[in-house]
Length: 188
Image (tube, rainbow, N blue to C red; front, side, top):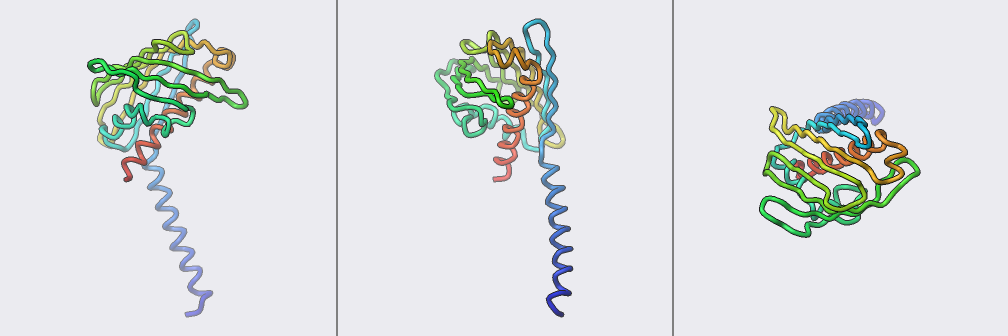
């Protein structure tokens, strides 16, 4: 058999393998849906993530506050500064970007943990006038479902100027990065 007869066969096999790998990768991706509504000065966020990882993996990523800088690209600092009962107090600093615009942010949040079920975050200090969020986790037949709800009253010009699209962009980006980390950890 000469080289020219073998090459089309190898190309076909390579194309089929690439197609199979593409479908496998699609199956591993998270389905992320984010809705943002403005009521008065507040933005209300309602988001869901369906991801094919065990609940424990999702929980470990969502609560890995001391390593969150390696997960979320907009953070330059994230650390637990205190623990009290089922709560942790987390300090975070970073830069949010939207198109050509960016702004620095800092916050200290009290985060109440209900292991493997719920994460409630309340901003104590920071750039937002008010920030409260709740993440609930539940097992599904195919993995884990996350439900994220937040009420944000921004104190930044960029967030007020670009409003809902800016908030939606930030939430989608953060959920996508956390989902990617969940998938990466599960693949180890």
